[in-house]
Image 1: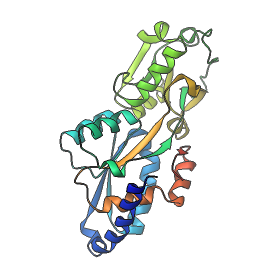
Image 2: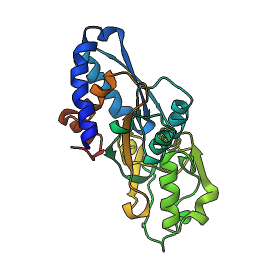
Image 3: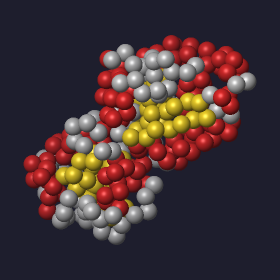
Image 4: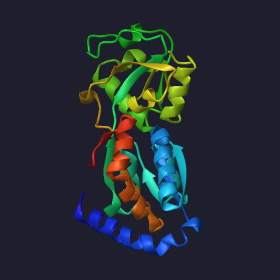
Length: 255
């Protein structure tokens, strides 16, 4: 964690006293990647109880949220499922650069509806297109982070050309998960943490990390975000919250 970020966190502690007396009248708006839905809902509920300040979560694809923030949506915090869309907002001068930190990691997995798994060997000699019938769901391949990771992994494994016409791109990773849960897609590529919160899918296998870019979740305060955002950022890197992230299967990049 850089010195400037530490300075922001220290200032947050001082700011707590100034907004604490009026916390009931304030709220924080957090724009977060869809894959953070379950874990962040638990974390923000706990934060509300401890700090007596309302937190409003908005979950969607990182790409959609970044575009909304660029267009002036009233967000205080942005949590992305990749560095691409955080970089996008940084280039647009829409985040406080000194508050940016890489918070979490994740893994990319292949899933199937519960009880309908199939054999896969994550090598270039394996033909994924013959391993199952039907369609494969993941996020939109050119914009949604999970879809971007998925396309790169499929290309690196030499599977892309044979399977590309059967891929369904969805608005976010949770939509892809739902399609597989319903059996509308007989396979899907999602994050490990998404698969683990569902009782309706099985993990067929984990994509080797060498097949795609590292899955990194950066977080930052949005330009003109409320001062209370700094306290929330400090909260996210606390040991207690780290345990919650770990419980859901995320890798902690900041300890």
